Length: 142
Image (cartoon, rainbow, N blue to C red; front, side, top):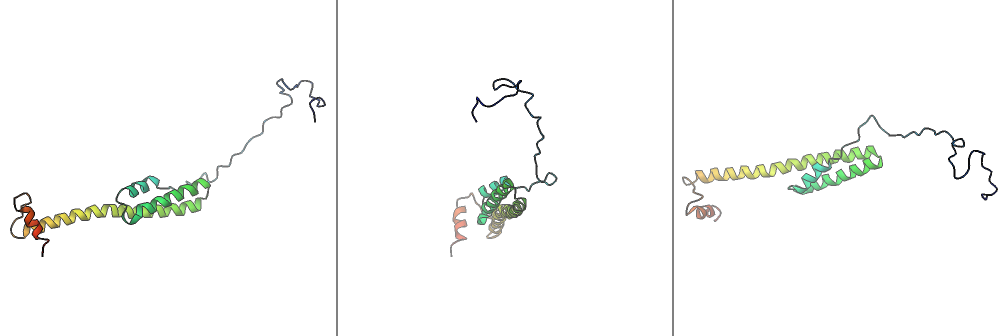
């Protein structure tokens, strides 16, 4: 259809504002999905902290992987899979945080026990004296 054969309404020309030829605007409905249910958490910051600190047996890294999977699934709208990945990330984070607290506590307990043992064997133990280092090394020689 070419422009010369098209008939415009009398009050509407191509370069003018044609309000009478416009149709009234309809309503638009946007479906927001599950508005009553909160989306699952992804625990990404907690996973990053566990990954960067100690990371015993790569538990923090596993938590980070499941956190990223949970975020991806939540973005794609698959809330059931996002919830499963979120639960796994939470438990890996709990295990990693437990190990991250347990290892320094064990080191402190072992140091205290070593100091108590050294203090009770052969009287007192002088760490800062002249023969303190030699006495300490005698404990490890056979």
